[in-house]
Length: 207
Image 1: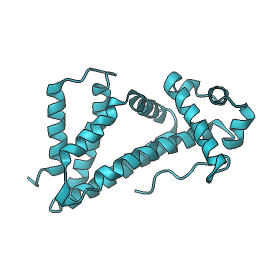
Image 2 (image 1 turned 120 degrees about the horizontal axis):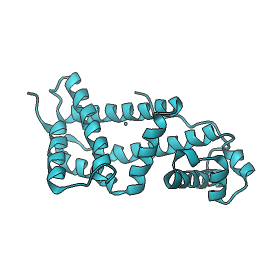
Image 3 (image 1 turned 90 degrees about the horizontal axis):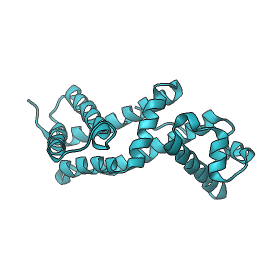
Image 4 (image 1 turned 180 degrees about the vertical axis):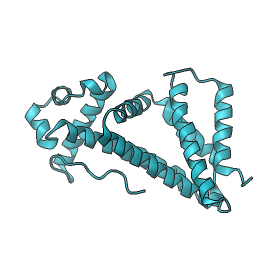
């Protein structure tokens, strides 16, 4: 955070080998520009310059700026889901809810990752195409987390599982703004309460 993650966006050649590697390098350059300068500066020319290629070369893989943005968004969200899946796949007998929450919070120690999602959230407020993809990502995240809670707390009503999943995501994602230093500074006392609250959402029995 349904259907699958956003489909591969239109653009230049895909597949394996040199073309796929070059596509990845161009998306690396686009991500660098986005992190360094923000979305307003994410122009095709700026990305081509950052990648050290001609503009026409970039356009061979991503004909337009929307194609480039869609591909970058697709990659960022897929990477996040790939990080989530192993965390949510634990069998009931090996549940480590505290470890799961700590792993998710550890992502917030990466300033680049926090900045990247901050830019995506801001962009989603301005661009409906991006907003649709971001909503699909969080919907998928919620569904995966709901299933995780179902496996570990099968007696909870489905509405309760979904509500817990949504509040858990709100808690973790909102925490990134405070724990990263964007709006505040993290404190041990706040982190302890955050951890306890998040773990309870995953593990507490029905009222």
